[in-house]
Length: 485
Ligand SMILES: [Zn+2]
Ligand SMILES: [Zn+2]
Image (cartoon, rainbow, N blue to C red; front, side):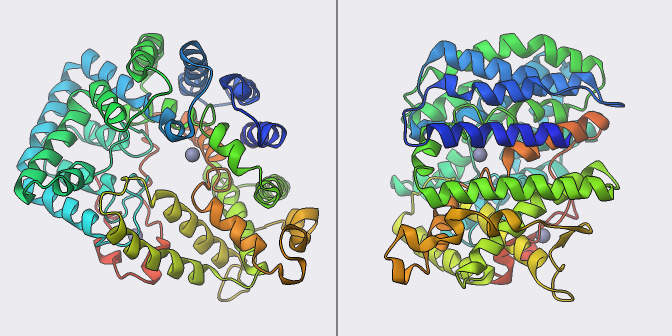
């Protein structure tokens, strides 16, 4: 599983290094598709789960290639939101029991008007501070936490509750984030009461007609690159036999709605025009490359020491790059709390400046803050921190130390004053940290973990994430990780 995760990451980095600054075409993602096609079914793993991942990436790549050559930067983050809607529709169409549960849940959205209204108001006003509205955990203000609250009071089988919950965490059932319709309506001059009704209607649509809802969201948002409805209909048709096979094999619905979605983003999102543009900067490219080596070397060290579980591999993988990011930050004299403070203060001004800001605006800032918060705890000497270790494995920071670019920031600015170069490159990555956190690595490892336990839903993570903003904004009393369906 380590080899598979690293080859996904290396495929992305390799293409980006070669094509940065150039024009993107869908075919550029071929090396990532090749890496995914190298995934195998290990001992004790469910072949159906591995297939959901591998076949989805291939379906995504081929369908997209059939529809367009190019994806505009404005459209690229959404490419991983066209898989869960069709899959959810297949499950509802094929399983009358699940259909009944879904319909009870949709009704419950309306009966929870007070809850939905309160959370929409809180999001609009920035009550919780910077929040990842589509967080994969139960963070305050996230769609996951609201859906969880609603599900708690619905009388349907627990397995169905978990599936519905997964569909809006690691599963990306549409691009919708709680509160977006409410904010639009308020800004359009409607009353608060009407805005809450609009919010409820949109939320219901996301579950009642997922494909139509995603099409509407993209149309309203000005998507141009390809016909998104046609993509979803083609994807639905192509994936249906695989979905039914997974159901037959007893794979939890919560995994069926997530595995095929979180792995496709490398095709036309991480390998995409926006990334080719961002990586034109030598320092940004160097950070992504050095971090990839930190990841590879640390995972290798762990292998030599031996891992206790597959989850440990995931923890070491994400912990190593988090530690590396904090290390780069500290080289310029910055600390994680300083950056969390800065981005959090900025957030409140941003809410006022742009009350109709996109639902996703602060999402990756939050991921970035969480990463450096965790990383700096790992990096810090004992007993305050972990002494540079994750799960007992010492993070190898040498690739950062030995990187020619990162060792010579003066070459990329006014040379005698080059003290903010690495920090400024990190700030760009704060909007697009996908290959640092790293998403392809997490996706590949999660599929391997889920394949070992296909009947247990792999998401949302039922742990407290120790959100970085909690060091400034006292919101942890609203964290619902301990009270989940
Ligand atoms: Zn991403
Ligand atoms: Zn928490």
